[in-house]
Image 1 (tube, rainbow, N blue to C red):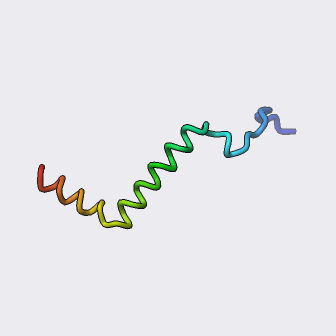
Image 2: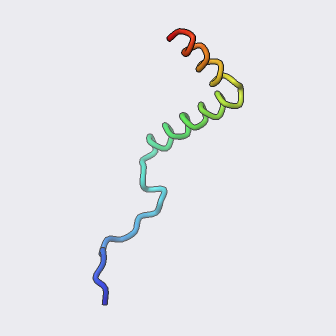
Length: 51
């Protein structure tokens, strides 16, 4: 008989708290909007030009 970890498994949604999930959703949503609107490339070009 194999003696393994005796801890109970947690559901995946309990890995983070609500604040973390909200932050993740805002960051992912912002990234999607930047890419879809073409703003990400524009901002990268501006930063490249400034540097």
